[in-house]
Image (tube, rainbow, N blue to C red; front, side, top):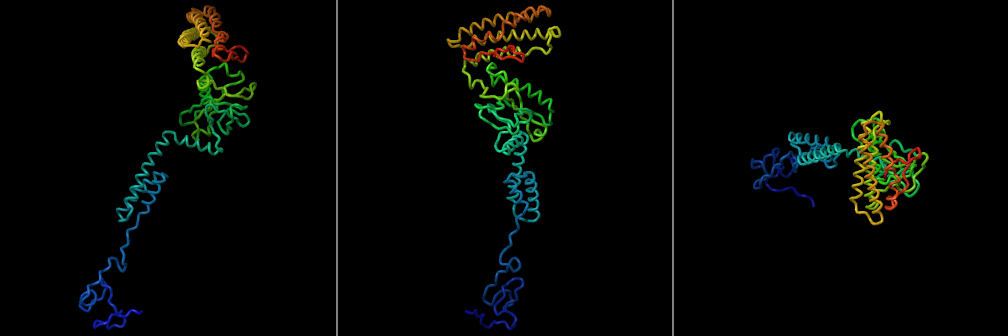
Length: 397
């Protein structure tokens, strides 16, 4: 139905003017009453606030505030997110824009992320993350095998970086078995010589904690270590891995060499700990090969051996041994007392000749074969390890 124009005495005479009233406002023509508004008797229209639009335009949201919040939530580039949030707050106040809450939230989250990143870097987490990433990049193969794991190395190469090692069961033939690991410190690469010296000293020191019974380690097995290279050091690699591996004569390994408190019984552990005291003292001999070159140093060494023999005997007597080995252990403790007295004479020798007079006797009192009876009673290995010349090494464990 067509819309009819309003009728009445107030029809406009101008043919170009619409036949109904303009909306009242700053540009509305005067009504016939002489006042702005609608026809006589009708209230005036409410003027529009912004031009001709019937709605108010909201202030725009600051774009930097949005970006700051996104970076803060993702914890990505937290420093940038913090700066953007602060800049956004200034722009919002100056321009009258919206987004104060977004800017504040983005700045706070970015600040928290910045603190977390700083702690992550200081604590070495970035290095650990990189090592984990490298492990994943190699198809899940561990770059540094864990203690107790056995592995094969490409080409049998065991020196250098612990890279591309394939974990295999220890029951079968394998190239190496990990018995310890430790991390180096420092920022700059210390050099091949220093790393090798540190690895050699630390790995040999950690050997007995994994293989407490040294007699159970075959003669064809030696200690090796996998160390960081200069290139891997730059990516955060600091780990040295200590492994048992066969020598050229010994070939590959078969079976695990682990014999510690997780494998041995309480009586075996008690004996091996006591014997270890003497081994440590024997290994502390002075560098000078000839007594004449360092008589005071050799006398101090003899004194350490005498003290170790006394401590070993005390530890053996302090343990409650089962009936099947008590008699053998008591006899060994008595032999240790005799050996201690002779080593005390070595330590008090006035000259090199007197030193040798007592040394030969003292050394014979601690020969490894004296421990065979006790070892057999305790169920430990009974064949002493041999040196490169085929002779017994002298170690009691």
